[in-house]
Amino acid sequence: MNNIYDEIKKNVPDLEYAKLNYSYIMSRGEAQEKVEKLEKDLGGLAVYYELTGKRLTIYYSPALAKEWGGKIVGKKVRLARSNMVGEVTSEAPYFISGSRCVRCQFGKDNDAYDITNLESV
Image: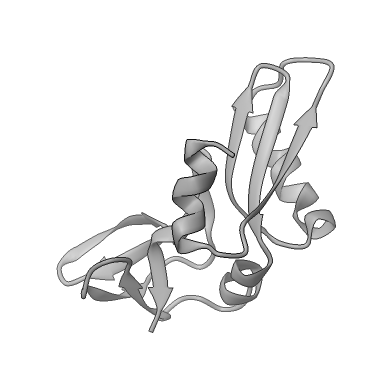
């Protein structure tokens, strides 16, 4: 497929994607709104989106929709490929530059992490 798909697929085995073509170039904000509205139709949580010219590519996961769809504050997570265990401090996942993220507390550090790099504990 491509580098982004292959990289996310390592941590998200059920990853799927949709390529949508539009007749105009949209803003990143408009693209994000479209992604959030399309999630139910896609049947999964959008974990990443890419906007290139008139094309919007959405990478999504049905499994992660179940995992991150309910109450997540206090959820215990492990940072992928490490032994660091922390706790989610945000109310819901949100986008940062196309990546779906949550705030997590790992020791003294409280920062945003891409949900595709987090594993439930």
